[in-house]
Length: 59
Image (cartoon, rainbow, N blue to C red; front, top):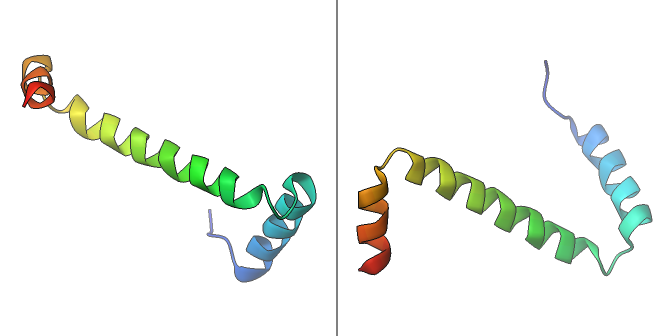
């Protein structure tokens, strides 16, 4: 499976602009970024035991 080229990205961005409008795109991108960040944090915390995670929250 190959990656996206600049032409594919341009088409995706054009479709997103039509669907969401120019003002909503930054909000959608921010939400997507926060979702990815939360997902990565969840994967990192999965390696720790529940006791370690609770100790970190209390500190």
